[in-house]
Each structure stands twice: as structure tokens, then as C-alpha cells.
Length: 164
Image (cartoon, rainbow, N blue to C red; front, top):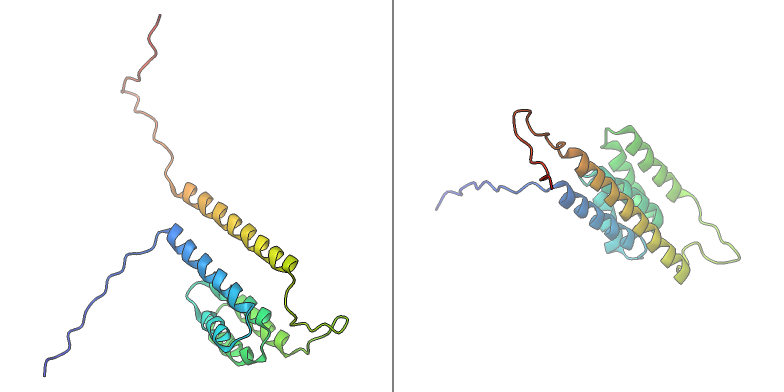
């Protein structure tokens, strides 16, 4: 019987732009899942509570609250116990606490009633604003990473405009 051979997989590191695009894509998926009412969406949201990116984890906490299922409470508590980040721990425990609160009705309309087209449009605009803000931050970060142009050395002759 042949002996298994260990293989080393080398992955190319992501550029900051690629990493941010992946984070934004996952956050958008979380926002979509949070508006669904199915076990698969909740499972996807809960999986992102342990994502390696803090921004995604924060969005996952928000998505659990938006989803509104008490089934998320145990996963939030486990994730809170497994993080060393005090702010994340507090956010996760607050989300779990939020989900334990009873819902309320406004004019007998359920708190989980479908969103109006205006609310959906407002959510899309908010996501677009967030994305534009992140893109601007990324561009500023990239610009700050580039070294300043080097002035010509003193002994070099710089071209001058011809005299007419």
C-alpha cells in the first residue's frame, strides 16, 4: 500500500484591494442572508461569527440581530467565550441578550413583517454608501502606502525649455 505524500499548498497572498473586495462580498452576503427566514441562511450567518476577518465577524453579529432568531443565541455565546477581543465579546453577548427580548407590535404589524420597497431601497443606499466609504478608505490607504516621488539628484542636469 503506498504511503500518503504530504503536499504543501502555496497560495498567493491577496492584495489589500482583493482582501477588501472579498470582505465586502461576504458582508453583502450576510446582509442578504439576514433578510431571509430559512435555516440555511442562519447557518451561514453563524459560521461567519468565527470568520478570520473582524469586519466580517462584526457584520455577522449585526446579521444575527437582523435575522431575529433565538436559535442564534447559543452560537453567539460560544463565539463570545472564544474571543479575546473584549469589544467583540460585549457585542456578541449584547446580540444574544437582544434576541432574548420579546418582539413588539406596532399597530398589530409584526416586527418580522416584510420590508416595504422604500425600506429595501434605503437599505441598498446605505450599503452603497458604506461600500463607497470603504473604497475611499482603501484608496487613501493605498495612496499612503506608496513612497513619495524622489526628486532628481543635484548633479543631474534637468531639461530646460528652449529659449526663443
